Amino acid sequence: MLERLTEQFLEDETLTAGLSEEDASELVGWLLGIAEDLEEQTSAGEGGFEHYLAQLKRLGAQVARLSRRYKIPVEELVDLIELAWEEPGEPGGSRPMQA
Image (tube, rainbow, N blue to C red; front, side, top):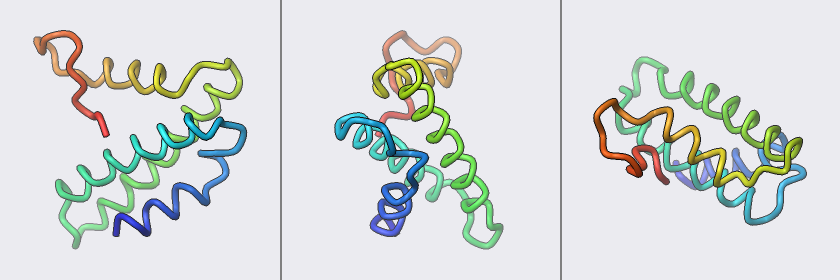
């Protein structure tokens, strides 16, 4: 499953085109980490994982677009998203969705 997801992410040009090798690797690694967590949390029979995967690809495409357009490293955008996902009251600096 992980190999199939890796291929899907790498072949999706909206996720990698125009990014440096480092940024593309960072983005794909982060998306894979989240996808693995989602796969464990969703039940296979509901089709929920595929829905989340499509949404995750859209999120990744927007991160890549922002990185390309504004020359912001993917790592900084990922950090911003993870900051927004933190649970209230968690100590600062934790990275709940780190890949």
